[in-house]
Length: 250
Image (tube, rainbow, N blue to C red; front, side, top):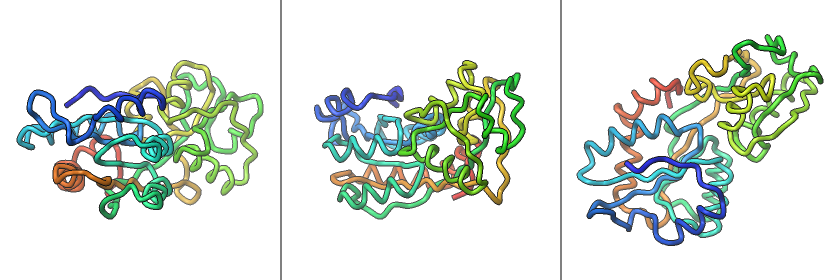
């Protein structure tokens, strides 16, 4: 399995235009390129390792980033075999653009929570505290699933929370809070778990929270290896790894 990476827009278009796709091969092994939401980084790396052990030489190359940024890359001509989004809105965008070869399927769900530094300098205990203008609050940009979900939660609760920064992906939110550059943020439960003790989580009540659905689909021109990867993610072994990382059942 190739080392996962988060690649900027300009570099990504150049790299993938040069032929990083399932049709390529390194050392004789076919390579399957998977575009996936950044919140899937750790879990897809683990599922990928398990898949490669059973896949007769197929190698996976992951490109992780914001779900919305990845669709933009695809619209601009970047090549990939599979797209996995942290929301259904960006998958619908890929469908509308004619990028998806076969019907998307939801493979996991996720929840959001408030994250704070371990010492919780802002004294945050609930969503209402995020309206405190003295707090430094960070969320994803509204184009990203986690950012849009956060704004939906604020609207549902009716709090006037004004973020001090909008990150390009959810891992940026976690990093900023972990470094103490923000007093609080909104992130997926799985990203908080992946950060270990670098941040702490404060649950959001079920009646105001959002449960994110993660769809996956093969893209135009993808080979049968793409379908095998998707089935592996949807099947028992993949689902077991997803649950271990804190994702909810599909």
